[in-house]
Amino acid sequence: MEDFYRLQRRLLLATGLVAIVTVPIVAVAFNASVAGSVFVGACAGLLYVRLLARSVANLSEQSRGLGRFQLVVPTLLVVGAAKWPQLDLLPAFLGFLLYKPALILQHVFDR
Image 1: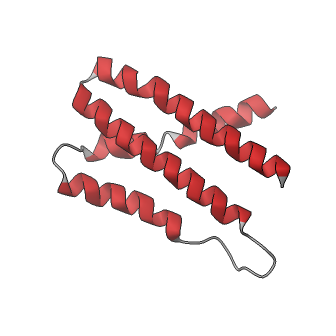
Image 2: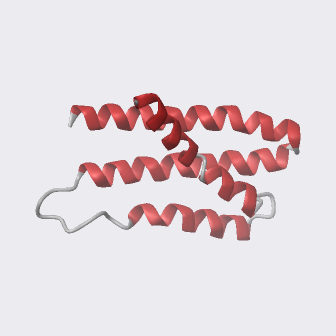
């Protein structure tokens, strides 16, 4: 389990670092509003990864599968983008997906 927790910490750190690098680049390339949407999406992605990792850590032989609670995060992100005009859906969703490059980077650096 210690290896899993170490991997979880590295994945959360990698996701945060990808977001820290991406948000200023988006702010320069586009504008602050788009960068803010990417930032909100990246925070939702971090929360999603954290909830998913916690759900995986709670797996046992008696449990049937992963919990569904982490699916609430992208749903709330889409609903929030629909409700608040300051939040753009596409940049927020792309910010949410920033955990994917972090997964790839984590896999590359583990080899």
